[in-house]
Structure formats: C-alpha cells, structure tokens
Length: 249
Ligand code: PGA
Image (tube, rainbow, N blue to C red; front, side):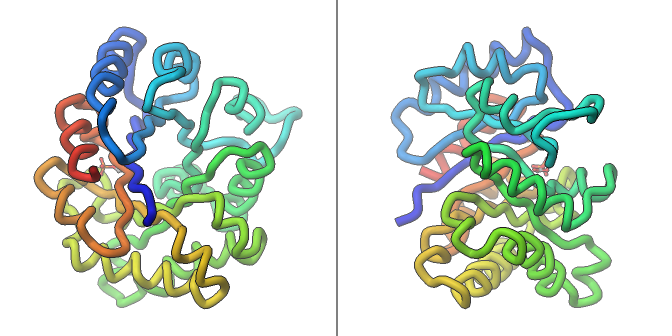
C-alpha cells in the first residue's frame, strides 16, 4: 500500500504573520490523519516552517533548488541549504519553472539529481499544455519528461522520489482534470516505470495537481493510481487544505 501524500505548493505567496496562522492550523488539523502532509513555502519562510513544524506530523520542502552544489550562482539556493532548514521534499520541474524560467528537461534532471545527492526527496512535476493535449500529445510529452530523469538517474532513483502529474491547463485555472483523465495518465506513468522495474513502479507515489479543491479531491484520490495531490491555491486556505488532506485519508 502506498501512503498517500498531500503537498501544498504555496508558490510566491505568504508573509510571516499569515504563514504562522496557516501553519498552526494545518499542524493541529492533521494530527490524526494517516496520510502524509507537507507544505512548500517560498525559500525565506523555510526557517519559519522548520521552527513551527519540527516534531509535528507536517513535513516541509522547497519549490525548487539549484542543480549546482555551491559557487558563483547569484540568488540560487543549493540542496545542502535546504537540508540545513530541515526540508524533506523539493519540487523539481514545476510547469511554471519550465515555462517562465526556461527549465529544460535536462536542467530538471540535474536538479532531481542534486536533490537526491543531498538526501532530499524530489517531487518531479510533469504535464502537458492544453495545445499538447488537444494535439493528442499528452502521453508522449509526459513520457518524455519522465524519460529525461530516468535516462540520467536510472529507475532505481524513483524508489526515493515522488512524481506529480500536473496538466498545465488545470493549474490555477479552476479546471480540474476529470478523475478518469488523471487516472489514465497516472496509469501510463506507472506502466512506463513498471517496464523498467515493477517493484519501483508499485511503490511510486504519483500525485495529481491542478485546481484540486475540497469538492474534487476525494474522487481524484479514489483513483487506483492517484496517490495524493500537489495543491496550489487551496493550500493557502487552512480549511480547504485540511479538507483535501482528509479526502486523502
Ligand atoms: P493549483 O496549483 O492547485 O492552484 O492549480 C497546483 C500547482 O501548481 O502545483
């Protein structure tokens, strides 16, 4: 049985004051849940997450990292720095990083490797745009994004990683993939991994992300290959995030 994971991606939102209230509510609300819960605040708030969440049932992580270990890379943040602040997870290859910041499949694979070399758990985000879906390219785009990491890291690396399927057309749009659409892509991802290693595929957690709301969470998380969610907008509202966590329980 794969333990479900619900991770909040706060994107570029937050303030010390709002975060404190949100984190306290989330911490108190998940104590008796069987699923795993994580939050990914912006870098400057990782110290706050660490001090408020240490010893609680909620883990935390970052939204990206540098592929380099150290050096003259102004404004970048290394895996070791994230580890210093107690991060367990780090998102890699979020579609906003790919489209707005030019992260290629190769860069994403390098970031994935940097995370694992520091014992962080990368959450590899994959997903097609609306144009790609309409052109019938969903399976090939997602498979290419996954292969970019598999080719560099090998299938065994997925034993200590998480994959998040996030159709770009569903992110922040209010349009959620139907449970059937999500399940079809999740199953294809698992089949691709299973062709290399059945046991790694069986243990791999594949999250769905893209406008998950309390009303849509339970049916999505009820699909055979959907092992939880990566939550953007709804992760900023304690009641909504907690309702989504309960739906994964
Ligand atoms: P959303 O974002 O839930 O606001 O659509 C999801 C994500 O980008 O991870």
